[in-house]
Amino acid sequence: MTTIRLTAAQALVRWLSVQMTEDGERFIEGVWAIFGHGNVAGLGEALQGIGDALPTWRGQNEQTMAHTAIAYAKASKRRRAHAVTSSIGPGATNMVTAAALAHVNRLPVLLIPGDVFANRRPDPVLQQIEDFEDGSMSVNDCFRPVSKYFDRIVRPEQLLTALPRALRVLTDPASCGPVTLAFCQDVQAEAYDYPESFFEPAVWYIRRPEPDPREFARVVELIRKAERPVLVCGGGVIYSEAEQTLADFATRHGVPVVETQAGKSALPQSHPMNFGAAGVDGSAAANDLCEAADLIIGVGTRFQDFTTGSWALFRNPDRRLVSINVQPYDAHKHGSASLVGDAKSSLKGLSAALGDKWFGAFDASTRTNWLAGVDAHCAAPEAGGGNHLPTDAQVIGAVQRVSTERTIAMCAAGTMPGALKLLWQPAQGGYHMEYGFSCMGYELAGAMGVKLALPDREVVCFVGDGSYMMMNSELATAVMRKVPFTVVLTDNRGYGCINRLQIASGGEQFNNMYKDCNVEEQPEIDFVAHASAMGVHSVRAASIADLEAEIVAARDRDRPTVIVIDTDAVPGPGEAGGGFWWDVAVPEVGRTEKLDAARADYLRNRQRQNLVN
Image (cartoon, rainbow, N blue to C red; front, side, top):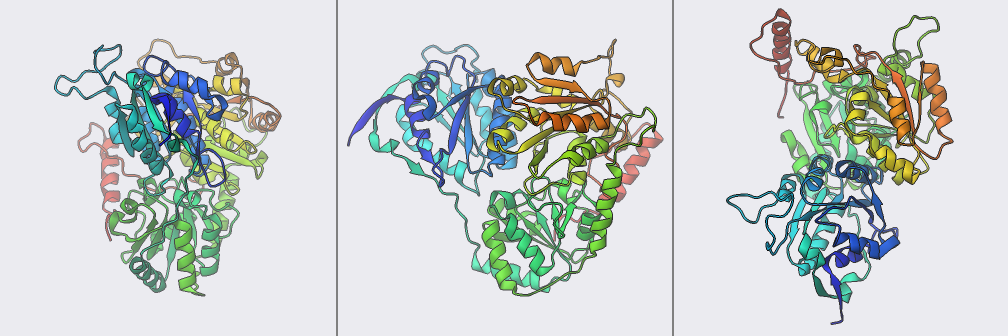
């Protein structure tokens, strides 16, 4: 056996550089890195040495570097991914939130935090967490519950088994999610005689598991017997590249489609079978279908509470659930008749088995009426209509009117996700939402990741002032790398979304808007100046018309554009023909009549929950 002597860090990056997709690209395109003690000497030297064969990119914050990597993987439909490395201690724990985000959303990212010395000679080292009863523990054990695969590399030869296991998880549709390789810093620098064959290029295939014949037959029978079925389109449709297959199934059999946050834009909003978003932030057209449906067919969805209206939406007493999913855990939720398999293969097979079976038990006018209501709700304010600040819906309408087939709207947290899910009318693939974890701070880093994955698309990032204040530093990275995208920063002077929920739950305005906080001076933050200081082209839009013009102007720039617009802090997205109850527990004993009324309303809604078949 021919061997080559490399440090463990050199072996890791060399191996990653030859792990290929079916299209002949590296699966791990490159590595985001902030160096510190624990990764600078070992991994730093290895990454510098391998150069463009596995490029390294510098970010500003470990969490946001990982957000960028996750957004890249999501926009790439999980066909490609990035790695992220950090030092030990706070550099590592900064990535834990991002790992949780990737875990919830089933998205691939390879996290390589530096770890303590495997030989323990210098213990305790700077930033080391010590457990008084477990000498094997380090701070990186925090990654265990938020990783789909976790390994600690304490000997260089362990890479021979750990790396293939890591790539298996990252490329497996069923187990896909974050992988953490905690890399002890002394081991990174240790040399080992690795087999040369270990570094031969390898191709990783994204498999399409076929459903079990018995499950398949049961689901076909359930669909045949249904009178009012509805399809719930989840993110798995997009990851399976089953968009056209879903459209063909819905059109051929007359089964209307409703969307989740992750599944939105699998069908363009213009498709006649697309009745829009379902659930808490859903359309009236979609929710009416779900309430009456006797069979709900989930395709690639986790059936999150926003989709199901906290399991109060599906009201038909005879309703059944079917769940088509590559992950058995998701396919068996809430007593569903499971169909464990690839979305595209499963839908094709079901359509063939159903033949010319046609349902068509829906009123197409509800969709038309809802979309007309959206247009009216998002219309520009009338000239001379006073000095009222625009609503979030009017901001969305402005971007919609100047959008093209190449525009992607993206967001993550606050009021905008619900408003966009209800109101944004995308072309196919024109929507990117991180709402599994709804992580404030994902937006700006995520926008960069989307643009890196899809450089020929226009990326418009909606972000509130609260999320912008949490994490904005990757704007500087986007400027350095000349990654252009457009940020629409809506300033309502606080956490407007959670303030509305506080009021709706019977509470008083407290600690969310700046005016309701225990401060001596209300901040007046100049977001335009702040973004400009990082090299971003930033402007303030004085009106909705200004916003439309600035969106168009941003398309010719080679760097990010931030457009700041003041918005109304009080109104939410409005009805616009949509909305549903969400289970947010209200205090059982209150001090006010308003809180007592909210509790009574909460109990009435809770009685409608239908948690199992």
